[in-house]
Image (cartoon, rainbow, N blue to C red; front, side, top):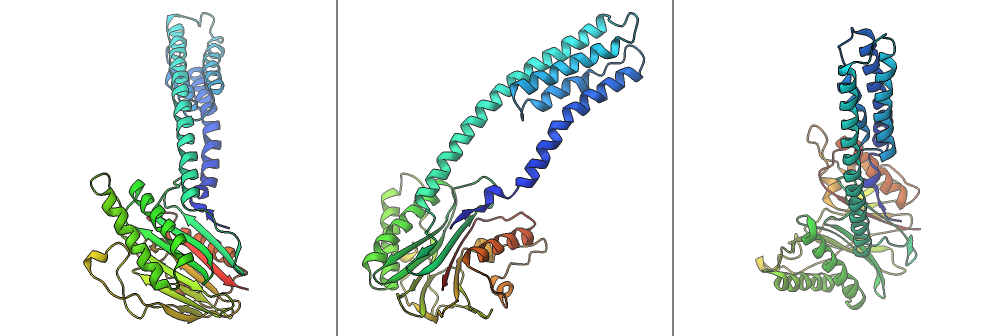
Length: 367
């Protein structure tokens, strides 16, 4: 099944950070107490005491914030009990300062909580929107094992311009993987248009060439309708694929997209290269070339891998691209889900966790 792996990428780091933030206020209070205890009367540790509730406020509850402030004041009282006449105007001023900062920290905490609630709501809406536009395909379609994965370059990001779709049709199981130029809602609108047009055309058209032309017309029509209203990203690289029912071949039509890969059961890798180069979808006004699908063997135990350039253009610290064909050669995976999980992890390691582009992956295996 499909996975949005980008949102979990920094989970371990987040847990470690929160553990440190839980300890930090106690360290600040202890540091302030030691400072005041070890220095002559008149030296105040109020900066450390005041910092404790301020550290707690953005990350934890209102109760924790107030508790940090109360512990800071209690530490001041405990330290000055060692003096016979330890409570003077300076000490009361110090406690008043910490109490004032604690009130401000509580106010900050309330504002942060409201902001977090609004952000959580926006994220839920964004995730629901992406699931509506880019639903996860079933694990088995038309006798084929299918897995999809969407890896966002930015943690907690849901909506992007990469797309995939799978459709079981009378002509075979058909697939599309694409990458819309740009980001934001304009790109999402183009994704919705491409997937909607693909699902309709895949059912009705007898060839991939005709499906590609339907997608071209849909983008042109939507671009004309939206022109002057908002930005519409109509430039989409895409690869269409078709596996006929009962056949042992795959047909691929490429519109300016990275070349698909077939992983055979013995570990050999085959790139499916187009006979003729073609422009991406949405650029029909620049020129017209006849679409031509390419056929390749697709025997039992073979896996078809479709991907966006977030995979093939992922760079390491020295600027070297991740080469999926070279990396996968000689390797065998139990199934498409394991293949995609391995690719996602290897790209994360290759880029040092700093991928600059979203990545959509779709793998199809013939049992």
